Length: 373
Ligand code: NAD
Ligand code: GLY
Image 1 (tube, rainbow, N blue to C red):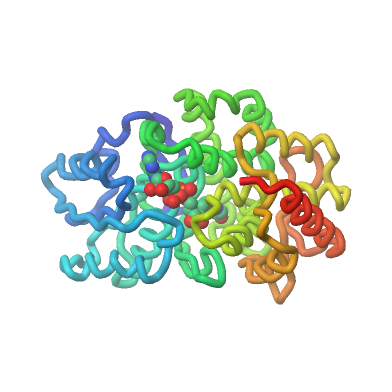
Image 2: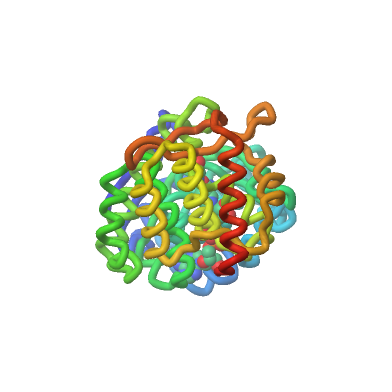
């Protein structure tokens, strides 16, 4: 087992990473202070892993465990569905000592964290992520929330878990498309701050796609190390801080997710196309060279991720959806763009808007000419 520490002073917590960790109940139990746990999961994950997690919690004989099973899908990441968690907690008379445990991917994790942040003004929270996306990114760092019809992840809170337990064995049941979706966030770490990791991914992408346990464990650990460092440096994504760099490709990507309807494109797929769009803009601005741009496109394609947005999206739609991004400050759009050699990026509103127009026109035209996805 590997342990990566998220260093946030008295709110620091460990990320345990390893195969078969769901069988080691004490790793979870020692981070649960009260007597009651509410497991939040969904209808796909419950038949696969709920009983194991429940058994791991009950093992010590000290905990009372309840569960709530939500519908599965990004389209259910809403305030309405979130209410079911609070309904269950109130109906079961759970007090402020309860721990909410998220068992699932990023949707379950983000919703459970937000539910925990609000229930009786804040109860304990634990993450047991079961997708690549959640194991390398969403379960770490305390961003929680739900979607709004007008914008992705627009309602939420920063709320850190007490522990993240990553059992890499759970990825065995993950569909291939979901595996690839998570890999787009892994590639992100290489691009924004870890050039040797990007090179490792170029050399090992086939092993990752084949779910080689050693390669998966390495990619999860290295991603968590990167994420933990960024979160420790800038927990709440200040305007001058580094956390926004984790959103490379996301402004374009969130526009794709909102524009196509939540759940049609997977989050990582939208981020992949968005990252290629950010790389294109960076190249048009003269900030990266052509060979880096081409390596990014090639690695996304090898990961079987889309490199064009959906053919249905217009430049006007991109413009209006990107204008509600959380990084917009005083009405000015800010983007994460690559600048310099591999592993370097900037968060900036200081770029030629005509170049952004060129990027949007290029991608919407190319997508219409060659419908993909
Ligand atoms: P997801 O939670 O929808 O999970 C993907 C699918 O896989 C779902 O159908 C789920 O039921 C299923 N699943 C989960 N684990 C499984 C397993 N082990 N075996 C079989 N099926 C399994 O999607 P995701 O990609 O995990 O997360 C995407 C969400 O995460 C988005 O809402 C995104 O905004 C959010 N996100 C948040 C952060 C953050 O920092 N909080 C970071 C990245 C992404
Ligand atoms: N996934 C982006 C962040 O955690 O900041």
